[in-house]
Image (cartoon, rainbow, N blue to C red):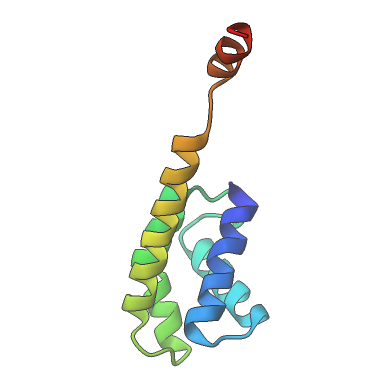
Length: 102
């Protein structure tokens, strides 16, 4: 989920804030780094923490209005996406069990 998650959040930041692609991605990278995470390996839980605690300040310092609202919406979207992936992901045992029943 790592890089896909970063891309997902960066694109939403662009859409919601009006930032350009590079600024949105750079701001997200700064927030992740300030939290001790890297874009490549951040989990959904870690991304939510960054969005809720660090990103509002980063957006505020860049003149984005209502940064908390944007970040809360993003965190909710990340949680929803993570839950959807967890529900649709099959374990190897489930796959073999399903294939064996044919």
